Length: 160
Image (cartoon, rainbow, N blue to C red; front, side):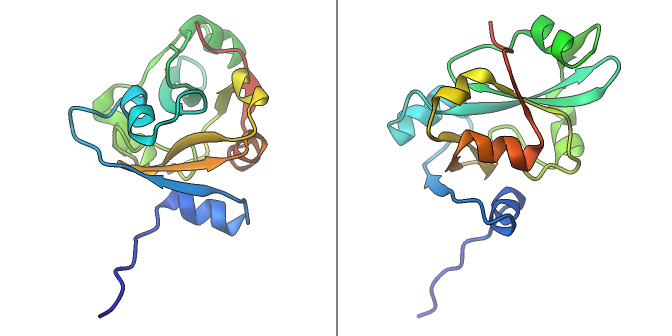
């Protein structure tokens, strides 16, 4: 009997093209449990789960924030860092059209465009971090410096 082939996401394909080492983590998900806290409980990991948020700056347009799953994005800090006067969260209905990803499966890697990406500086203290791999129920673990490289991101203080 043929082995079922798993479909690779854009994020995984890009990571592999760049020959970046990573580890896949799969977990059971449901529509009611898509938060980073739910993911960390499913994976049994606390400190290195990061969530991907998409915001819109009044000057730059869409931008990506990668922050610890248990923290909140500080819109004033990211506005200042990104040279915007005002930043607000991208409306959920616009997420897929803007990024190519849906809520609960939004990866900082492999979006439709390479948006300015800001990764919370807390990641510098970690050997690896876990971010969405582009599909609900799938995460990838990689070194923070590799995420910075592939997203052309900046490590900055953007959480409350």
